[in-house]
Amino acid sequence: MSKRRYLLTLAVVLLCLFALAAGVQAEKTKLTMYYPVAVGGPLTKIVDSMVADFVKANPDVDVKAIYAGNYNDARIKALAALKSGKPAQLSVMFSIDIYDLIEQDAIIPFDDLLTTDGDKAWLNSFYPALMENGRTLGKTWGIPFQRSTIVMYYNKDMFRKAGLDPEKPPATWQELVEMGKKLTTPEHYGLMIPSTGYPYWMFGALAKQNGEVLMDGDGKKTFFANPGVIEALQFWLDLSKKHGIMPKGTIEWGTLRQNFLEGKTAMMWHSTGNLTVVKKKAKFDFGVAMLPAGKMRGTPTGGGNFYIFKKTSPAERKAAMRLIKFMTSPERSAEWSIKTGYIGISPAAYETPALKKYVEEFPPAKVARDQLKYATAELSTYQTGRVRKLLDDAIQAALTGKKSPEKALKEAQAQAERLLKPYQ
Image (cartoon, rainbow, N blue to C red):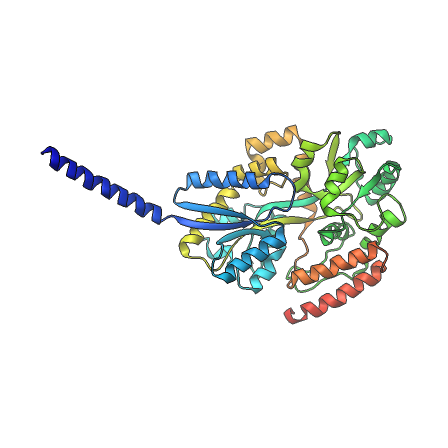
């Protein structure tokens, strides 16, 4: 073969290779994922790192993560993109958004995408308590990822100073009050429970501890006026008004963690999602405990699920499923839990060497997981936003002394019944 002919052949081969590469590049599936950043910590960097690892292992998929503020912001922005004709393919949104998203015909059930026995085994691999807010109408609409429970953080140094055993935090409401009184001084309170931001969430814990739930499993009924629910709100009010272990009025969700770190309260109820930040920033010996029991222990689960939007192509759905399976794998769930404090979402996550070692070295990391056996679903109904606001307003009206707990909750229940009547 002549040199000229050889060069021509080589050029043709190279052109074919370039064309093939361009074709492969053109065939990349592009995914846009909305993600809420609502709790402290460098979550964006952690998510970016996990997404980069996925793309490295799946070079035929591009993923763009858009950070959208809190959970409400993420829902609003994702649905706005959907209506604008430039939709995302998937999102992590509030687990309690499920009824709203179904009613708007915005999402598809995962059951429609899972066909093999392996797929079905994966769907059943998560903690059942975390699936309660993802399943309804006989199908699974949300897959747990950024999930939490409420736990009690407490300052062990303050316990020692008050003559209390730092390894024995209050296990009952009675002990909470008794210890709270010993821990309350002119410099700090014994306890703070946030009542802005997500008051209904904290109240779900108190109601469960008093043997009650706030809604049925179909999202069509609420039980705000049940006697046990009213008793739970009265107890919350009594912590400040009667027992004096908590500030009167409302306590800000957004600043409570800093108040705890600055020594303004000996105990706080807050999200598991703050665990890693508290671990890094606390300049005192602290502990983490399950919430104390009234008639029983109890906490609602919380946080965000993965959803896949209906306006997606078959290729996008397959790619979205690959991403979700990657992010929720035991190894990635373990990594996520260690770096953020959120719960490892499956028993298998806690069997990974990394999380097993972390829990041994830092026992507070297992508290939220162990508390799942006492957990209930977070408040979620049709017309969720409006129903939730009714309860939030009732709680704050009671805590600020504008209405009695009974009056506030009975009024909220009557209004919720009117909102939910069309769905019954």
